[in-house]
Length: 127
Image (cartoon, helix red, strand yellow):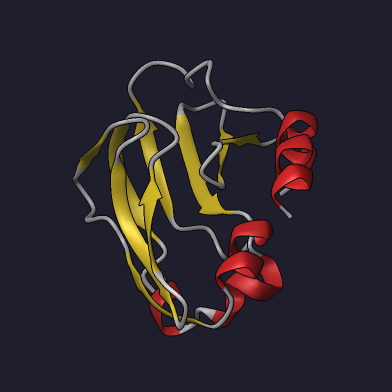
């Protein structure tokens, strides 16, 4: 995915909003680098309803357990079920094969999501 076309949550999740109202969600390469050595990921359940800004899963590294926050609201229609067994994909292709879930959106994307430039500015201050 073209990172410049994505929207970003301040908590380091990315979202690609499709023209069909389906959003693909993942975590950024910055988040993966900060966590280091991922060992476990809990995905949301297909059919679950998620709310923007609320937890919908978690990722665990040797350093910490971190919640995953949904950047948008809607119904989970698909998850990347192979991802928990291949967490190294997040380190090599966080914005492609490392997607986490696809969500049928309820309404549009929240205005609190950041564009690429604003997100890059945020992580420059954190790195």
